[in-house]
Image (cartoon, rainbow, N blue to C red; front, side, top):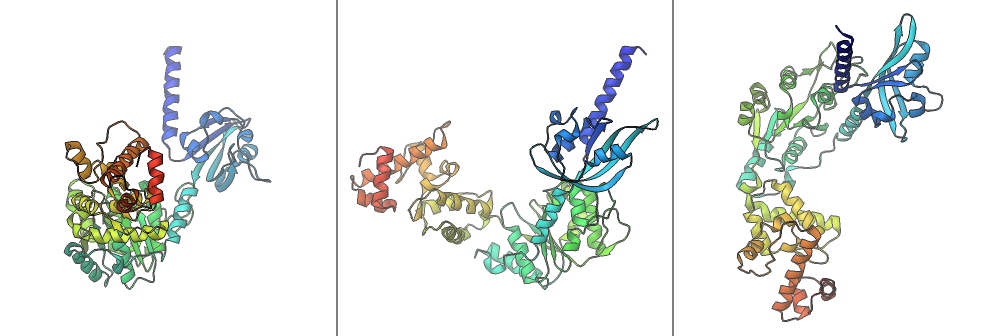
Length: 470
């Protein structure tokens, strides 16, 4: 083989090694005999919040700082020639950001001489934060059945079935679209059950990769993987209470199989452990798609569905219980009145009509956010009107549609032009509507202010600001 081909082959192999290192889920940091960094993979840049060019080919001692009396495990290993295993280390990057890792550090020896040192690092900060958050969630459930808003037959049927399910410890599967109120039902079931004095632990299964959520659910044994310590998982933390697993269909099939085994055997095994641990936990799972479709699309194991769905609750979307909208609107206005120190009394009749016609793809959560957004745009008004709605709702309103067709309606607003900024568009709407009301009252500021439900002084201020002659 020619020297050029050998050189190309070595270069290709080097690039392959670099790609492999950058795909690893552990940080890799290698220094040469002088303590200068020669390998620094992508995961390490993430763990230490450092750019690769700020670390590579620079002395490690000039880049990172260590607490007084402590030395880098890499430099210690380079100096002593002894491996340092499963060691927790806290230090600071060049921006004084604190970093905590668990490291396995090894000397690199060739022909009896130490020519460098390599470190494989795992970030334990994220896992510890997740554990703390879940521990704080114990007994932190807030909702009961009395707080579920609605009198429609669709919602009352689900509430009744949920109350019956609360009497037992059988698994429950809650099926509902995003924003339909799945967690509210889960908390209500827990608080109405005999397990109410125990913890309620919640975990969204879509929030974490399988490699992390498996350890979070089942716990880890010391030495199971690099940096692993003895730690109970969520099943053990929920002992005597309820474990709520949201978006269960986002788990991989192997992890669903392991979950199924835990449900059937009523025991779990920590990652890296050799013994099973008995558990006394009620499982409530939630899914945001039809279970039959999820099974057909291989998002959900059929056997796991049958095991979880001992009781299955199908939450109706808001578009199927629109008679509950007035109650929900009043509830959210009351909530944000207290939060914002406001005195909003309700919504205009045409706005309520728009609410009844809207299909609510985001369900109750969308309605809640709409009310919150509208009240943020109010000053001293007491009624939510069209001009208070977020811009993307104004496009769909009857008033805006009337403007498009040229059929003016009371309080109609100009057609929204594409490409304008939010500030420009909102100012045009405010100007047009105030001008319309003032003209309708023949310039009488007091009567116009009364219809707008703002003070006379507030209307005069707006007229001056918008350049409208009263």
